[in-house]
Length: 77
Image (cartoon, rainbow, N blue to C red; front, side):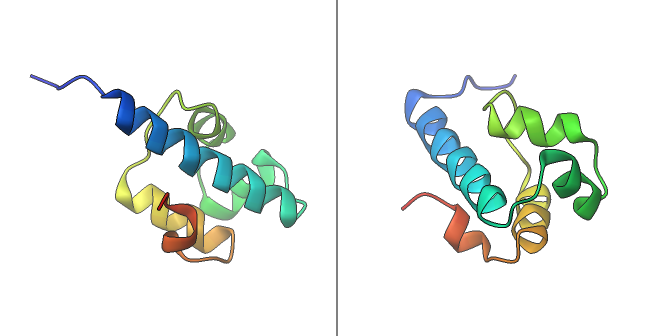
């Protein structure tokens, strides 16, 4: 049985999503370009940035690599 996502977890996901979006905008790349760098569908990036999906650790690592940053920089404090 899957546990419900807590408010604190949702807040953490929002912060992660905001940092992904900020870094993507700093690099001046679109969601589509990020998806292509990660070899995934643009819908996956859109859902992560809109906090409709929580990324797996592997996906989060791929996002960081594609955004030329560390996962630590994308994770909330």
